[in-house]
Image (cartoon, rainbow, N blue to C red):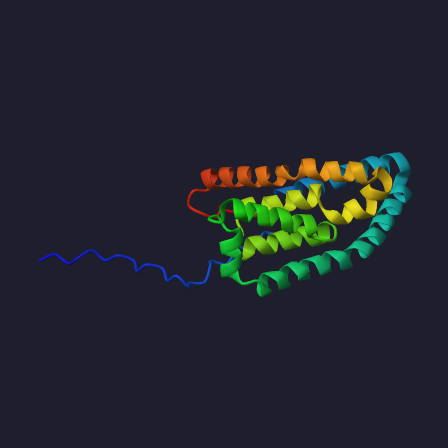
Length: 198
């Protein structure tokens, strides 16, 4: 008498999502950038001597000191958002099954998101962590880039005027949705079984 084949139990609906794999601190992009920095430093040293290299290094260290608090604040914001947002609601509103509604929500959120890249990118990473899909997150980032009200109010309105700013925003409206749809379309075909391998 043969035993019935054993099957894996079905995953529970309330099972915790898999934690994302930690990113490596040194990857190919870091190696390439480091090599380019070394080559450029050698060129400056050859042309201007050690004083030229030290002058650039001092200036950039000062700039780094000014930027690091903003980077830290943006990363903390993204982490806190990932902890605060309810995963089920985000997945329902911005996940792969959210359809056009998810792309529109991502677009609207990106348009009203204040701050610069130190805010926008950590928030986008947090949304991906809590269940938003590539499409909705792409729509959010593209919308923040093209429509973001902060830059429009601070720069466009005073310099280019109301009429230009309004027309530019109206013409840009469909682009985040189209980019999000395309991102969702490509992602599903490239990674039909879920997360990309890192």
